[in-house]
Image 1 (cartoon, rainbow, N blue to C red):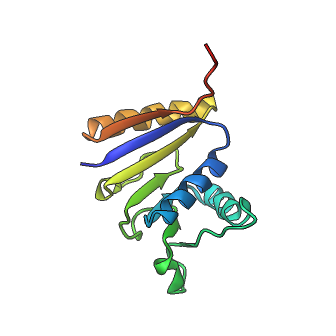
Image 2 (cartoon, rainbow, N blue to C red):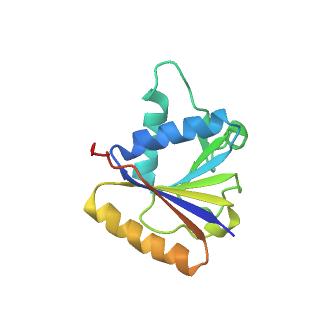
Length: 144
């Protein structure tokens, strides 16, 4: 059964995802990051620039070089040609077809109301599919 973790109320979605990917790669985890082309382009640039002292090796599914498939992080618009890795991170508005092949899926959701609405629909889809759902609320805590 696929476990799906939703990380809600993320301030900067792509920067947060970069940090998440960096941590996972450091732990020896391999990942596929799925999303539309425009978001993946921005995410690719963010991976190159978010840290001045670190590099997260990554490639695109379908790249002609053999290095892409040896990279711990693969970016793709569709899971059709993507190899199954340890974790799938979804940056798309929709549930990616084929998510069931992964043991773990991570959904990163900002505070944007439209994005949260899409996330609610994905939550329902995963729930109906029988996935284990995990909720992480990253909104700032107010002192009591």
